[in-house]
Amino acid sequence: MSVDGGMTVNNFMMQQQADFMDAKIVRKETAEITGIGAAIAAGLHVKFWENLEEVENKIKVEREFTPNMEEAARKKKLARWAQAV
Image (cartoon, rainbow, N blue to C red; front, side):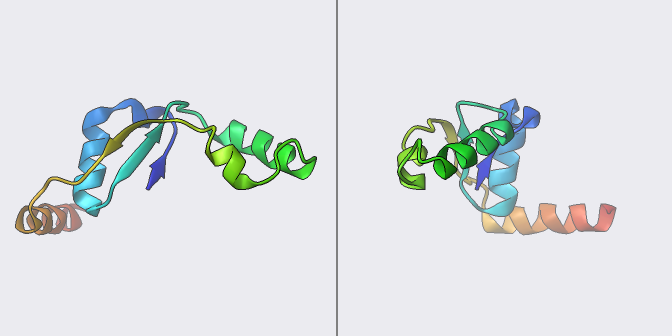
């Protein structure tokens, strides 16, 4: 899962997301990518870039978070969370 936005600078939160979702979390170097997405769409439209792959190669990954929670612990924590909401 690719993440962006202000909260993504919180390493603890990103690791928790990876653990609870049992999925790899990828954080880009640029935290606020939404505005860049609009620029990318415009650049593709006017053929500034040939294709999306060319653009993707320019976006740098800052860090990846991989799940490291055991399945039993994940299930227990998620069940506790579901009861709280």
